[in-house]
Length: 416
Ligand code: FDA
Image (cartoon, rainbow, N blue to C red; front, side, top):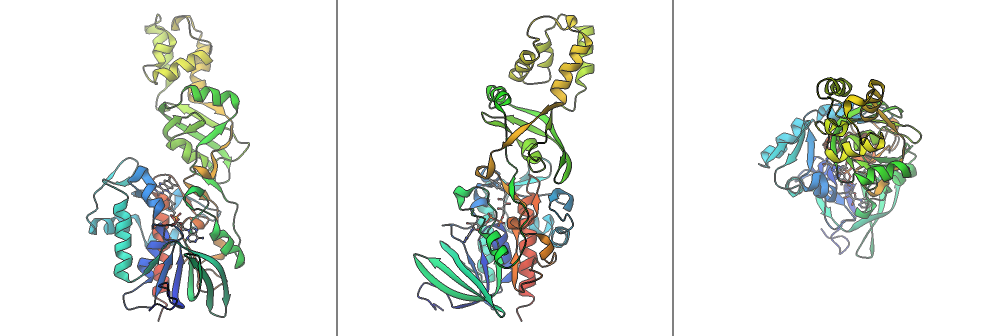
């Protein structure tokens, strides 16, 4: 069994690069107890590190609303087949089989009750049952293809190990959170084999602003408010998200901001709105009529956090006086500045904090049913490395499960 003295064989049917969400799911379905050998390698010390830290340690593992229109790609049709054949309900079934307690937090987002480790343990267990071999602290350092076999050089413990395989699955994720070992290595493998890679950029990431707004937002740091953010003319069309907005000492974050960041592009403004559920101008006019002696900041604080209303009143130069003394025109401007304020992001916090990488291996070169390369038989791309990116809320893991399943079942159905 030990062809190298380090626990590796010289030949495998399938080698999967990356023991993250997609790689582990693929291994579960590519391997069979008495079937051809499936090896999963990862340069990290533990598998599923991003699963472990996801969802604040509770892993938002899927979304009840998962559907193709919640995924961004140059080809929005590509994700359809995999998402339809391995759905959120399939993954929920697996979670239930393992008795893992979970709950819906909001907007269809399913989280573990206890710990993300439950999901990692489940996948490791499934891999073991299927007979997949996991080797950690192992990197892929060289790769080529001659005839029908891939020749790889793996490196572990300072030693180089040549192995060959019939199928090579690239599941090494994107560029987000380099501190956790993300390298973008998968794109290099794709390009080496002649695949196009679409422009990659940080997605689901906090936005940063110029000095004036940064100073303003910094003074509100830590404050969160129900709101909406909209952006028009981005790479994936117009978008608007109604969720919480969080002020930070560097700019804006929170679910609505992370969502819009995937659509935003340099040079485009975003429209910021607080309490979009409220007809604020009508409410201000009513208060002017009925409670004219109230101060405008006090009226606003019926609906918005106090610190925010104070800042809004200061910015509008309305710190003194009663609401009755303010003209309807000024009230209209005030309501507009709260509910449809255009701000120009300067950039984003980048891959350091981005939850995902937008773009990736161009889906034009891939089979949407199997995730296999159209030009290099036996080469597969799954998960985040592919140009398919989900919304915030469990969609990215669902893509990892669905694409991993699609490649895994395709491999096990052709292994003779
Ligand atoms: P993933 O990055 O998980 O795995 C890739 C693996 O490849 C890693 O284990 C890495 O070590 C390994 N690797 C890389 N290069 C290698 C090399 N050269 N050799 C060997 N191994 C290599 N999504 C969601 O749906 N719900 C959520 O709650 C969250 N929360 C969340 C929080 C945070 C902080 C982040 C950063 C991200 C999320 N996400 C998320 C996104 C989610 O984590 C992401 O979409 C999936 O992990 C992608 O799965 P993959 O398996 O494709 O890559």
